[in-house]
Amino acid sequence: MALPVLIAVLAFSTNEKFIVSGTITDDSGKALGYAIVQEEGATTQVSADGYGYYSIAAKGKDAVLVFSAAGYQTKKENVKGRSVVNISLAASKAALDEVMVTAAYDKRKQSRLVAVKGVAINGFNSYPAPSYQEDKEYNTEAYDFIEENGFRMAKDHPLSTFSIDVDAASYSNVRRMLNGGQQPPAGAVRIEEMINYFKYEYPQPAKDQPFSFTTELSDCPWNAGNKLLLIGMQGKEIPVENLPASNLVFLIDVSGSMNAQNKLPLVKASLKMLTNQLRQQDRVSIVVYAGAAGLVLPPTNGNNKATIANALENLEAGGSTAGGEGIKLAYETARKNFKEHGNNRVILCTDGDFNVGESSNDAMERLIEKERNSGVYLTVLGYGMGNYKDSKMQKLADKGNGNHAYIDGMNEAKKVLVSEFGGTLFTIAKDVKMQLEFNPAKVTGYRLIGYENRMLNKEDFNDDKKDAGELGSGHTVTALYEIIPVGVESPFLKSTDPLKYQQETIVNNSSDLATIKFRYKVPGDERSKLIVHSIADRSGNYNKASENLRFASAVASFGMLLRNSEFKGNASYATVLNTARNAALFDKEGYRKEFVQLVDMARLLAVNNNEQGNDNAVK
Image (tube, rainbow, N blue to C red):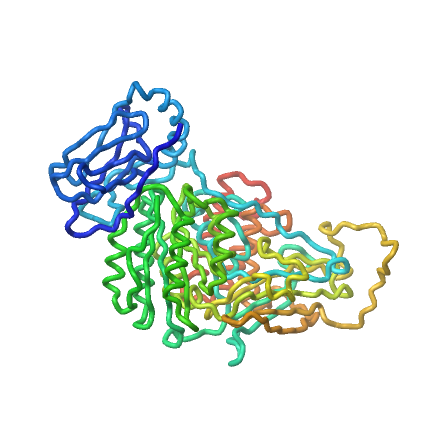
């Protein structure tokens, strides 16, 4: 059976239109997803979303709407001044076979969410519409499998190479789940993103450098005898008034899957906050996509905040999701209005549930990789629950020379788009890579904590064509290595037979623990710059370590507990709580205090779930 082509009018209404919304069901009251609604005598036509909800801008209060769906009898209804029109369609006997074929398809789509009455979600507060909440039985959130970095023998693998990561989406997403009483899946816990959600007290860089770096070595708190190495980077803080002019394209998903209170309405509120930060020299365009893509706001001066806010407020959700078409149009718009030596960026707001056109991970990645060569960066802001596609969002941000944040509420929107405005939107160093060479005379084994999807081959470090991470204005980046010193026995290292053709004797008079190298490019340049620094083998007592190291290690321990990592050693929620409470002085925004509360929430969930290995958490 060929499904009918569904045409979604991207809803950008005018005051002359009369907004009609409602739900479409069958005789039994079951929602009819993707039914067609058309105004008689007009070209206006929309598709209901997967849950039977529709919204249409009719010509007037006396409009006649025509409702149709595959396998059901078409029905006409006079609006008669009603802003809410709910319709029930009777099954068509002639199309019984067609209904049987589509039943399985519709059941999967319609059962993901359940309606909650009485909440306005489409931006027109005078026209009430249903909102939606998650039906956990049909949760389709998607996360990539993460194979944790294991320990490597320094004599066999002296080089550890990876791309920096300033994304922090994992932490806010995990917070959303824990606050909802749900244990996060292991694939949602990316430890480096949890660590880098927080700022650390690193020194500002020298005038001619985009970042400074800090190293510190202490005892490891969860595996006795091991060491913990902290590497911190601090991006140069550029005052907002000195930031280059921006050419921003808001790319907004207005498909049916965004029709929930914590999706499109939250997108609107988030982008209004961002708009309030803009200056006269900045420009904003708005591209939206559902069944098709369209430009609803041409480039507009940053001073025209009311115009931008009104354009956002008039957006509605409905239809399928042609994400690929939206991305193409957004980049085309950004290129047409490109600012030399400026900040050219697409800001994608979506739940990632693409289902029309180029929607596979591979196709979307190729599209983004091609577009990033234009000099336009990408910021991906994720919203919603139940069908959130974290795996796809993360890949798009990585391939688009950009960053990825998950917005679970207005506080997070403020953090990402107001408090960290410069870091989120203004790149000061791109393709930043880090490579450590460990001294096998001092180090038997090592493990990079997190960064699993940022690992690079050792040859990639000197390859300026190899893409890597970006660092924004004022951003901090922190990485932790757990180190097994020479002479320490460890169950994590397995012995091998002696080599036959190579000399294994280590002759090394250096007192260094390791040498660290950074490569980065100034935005606009294609040749990288190199910084080299030696790390001395000087370890301190963990209890006397800096607040930076102690708090970062507490977050890392928390991530390992959530993942039930084989490397967590004697970590417990109790030790995480104690450490975090005593390392929260650098906390003017209150995020570390919130972390303590979140750990306590996870501890209680672990007790309720009778998790093994966490008995110490309740002591």
